[in-house]
Length: 188
Image (cartoon, rainbow, N blue to C red; front, side, top):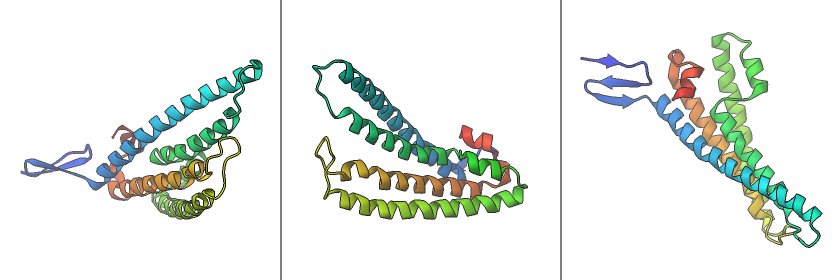
């Protein structure tokens, strides 16, 4: 007997076969889970660094000069990595406001167009980011004296993560059909 589940998997006989759309969304959520924890960890370091920077200003005996530079690089990394998290949840306020004003048929076309443009953008950022990292090995940071390539590697890394997330959510949206709503996507 052939039975179907609405929960994102289909049963063929007795063995279950996962839908590619559900598998793509689950992989997207797993990647996002890791990225979110990295961002939280970096944010914790940023808070400690800023507190240390405040203490250095009021305690003259502490002669630490790295706090400002570290805070700058941590903020950049957090912001860049958080982009892939927003993509995973399809959270972009500008696109969402425009997107929700159209009927379902137009929305699907817009989603494909937005995904294509965003993927093109992130791939360009990735390849130019690799060049930035390469050039960064020839320059050193002001305080640490380390090659700027190490802080700059966040640019192609974040672009690669954003591209992967875009592909995964696009696969899900293309293959899920109309039976899975945004709320159900969030629960997967």
